[in-house]
Every structure is written in structure tokens, then in C-alpha cells.
Image (cartoon, rainbow, N blue to C red; front, side, top):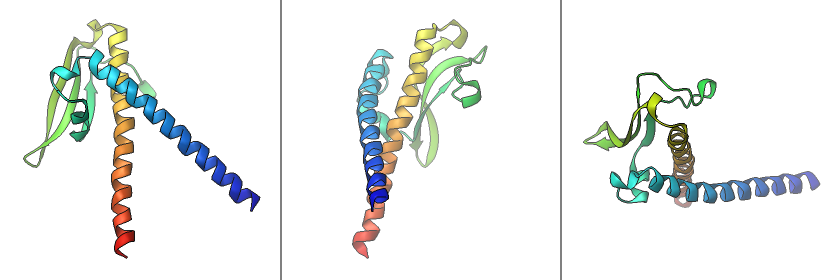
Length: 139
């Protein structure tokens, strides 16, 4: 019985930690949205989450090469939208040749994408949780 209680405490602590992290992430994401002037292309912050994804070009987000720039490429934030059943890239922000963009801006763009993906994953999780609940209520 004691080990079950300990597991429950650990799980509760972990969930609480995730929720606190998510709230802080959301605040920082909103700040970056304004700081990077994304409101010029995407008028409403919440509209960002209607996109299938948000990616960047010009900088690596791969674990092995995180933060490395791709010489000769352009730093750009791209939203992937579903238009007439097809995926379409929409430019949210263009910053110029990646090697000429200051490091602080590059880091902010990278941070925005990671924070966006973190929030988007929670929303996806909530969506699927709601769908699973429908099976349980229909049974």
C-alpha cells in the first residue's frame, strides 16, 4: 500500500510540475510573440495554435547540432497551414541571412519554436484525452 501511495505522490508532483512549467512557458511564448513582431502576420496569439506546426529555417533544432546555423540560408519562422486539403508554408517572420542575424534574435526565434511546440503538444494531448473520454462515455 505504501508503494502505491508513493507512486501517486510522485505522479501528482510530476503533473503539478508540468502544469506550472506550462503556465510559465505560455507567458514567455506570448512575450516572444510580441518581441518577434509575429502579431504583424498573425493578428491573434491564439491563432498560432490553429496551424499544424511552426518551424524555422536557417538554424538547427536537432539534438546533435542544436543552434548551429546553416550558412547562406535565411532565418525565417514558418507556419504550416492546411489550405484546401494541402499543407502550405506561411511566413510568419523573416529575419534575413542567418549569419547576419544577431545571436540574441536567433536564440529568441529558436526559443519561440521550442516553446510553441511545448504548448502545442499539451493541446494535442488534451484533444486526444477528450476523444478517449468519448469512448468511455459511449460504452
